[in-house]
Length: 268
Ligand SMILES: C[S@@+](CC[C@H](N)C(=O)[O-])C[C@H]1O[C@@H](n2cnc3c(N)ncnc32)[C@H](O)[C@@H]1O
Image (cartoon, rainbow, N blue to C red; front, top):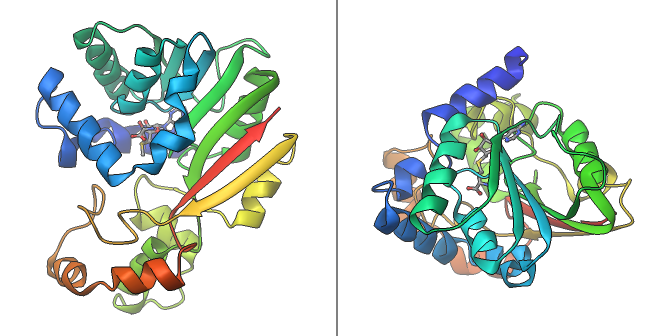
């Protein structure tokens, strides 16, 4: 593993995504509470992932994290495979599926070097993962490779022109008296794992240009709307104050596309 990927690995090995904020206990009750909170905060996942259509499809999830979405695919009866860069995420997801009596083929693995034959899957799903991997284009090329002809991919990566990005820029560039910091540097250093990237809609379409059809939609997230704990890294008085006065109604009305999540649906 190169140095950049090791840093990503080490970051997500300290806590899987949402673990500190939403997982009380690694048991049935704890995982259920975490799922409930996840889909309350991010209801658009349910439409995007189309869990109910997964029955008998051969599905790969890249970057399973705590395994909430993986559990949904397993419950729907998918012929399911999952990988994550960290042992921690794979252990959580294994444990989670075991307590619910569900099955999947889970392995520690790297999105940039998937250990599967060409054209293995009907569908590839990945939520909030590929922008963390140092070579995102390579990871997307791997999605294309392992998909069957006509197979679909549903991938969420971060959107550059987001309110989360703007808030981080105000906090670290403006208030940190380093106004020359670019958004690229802000996302890479202050959002989540080191080197995290975010893309414009045009850049996303370019990244997926090998696929036959690409639809890209951005959504305002609980992070953009300051409706939740803001990830694993951000706390403090200024954030608490902003949360109280944040003009959510105006944002929804005038900036509906300024969300951090970019939902990409595409076909090989
Ligand atoms: C923000 S979390 C998202 C997890 C889960 N999909 C979710 O929505 O909660 C990012 C996950 O991507 C994994 N990850 C990062 N780079 C990866 C790579 N190159 N290959 C596989 N997984 C990777 C991390 O270990 C981490 O579990």
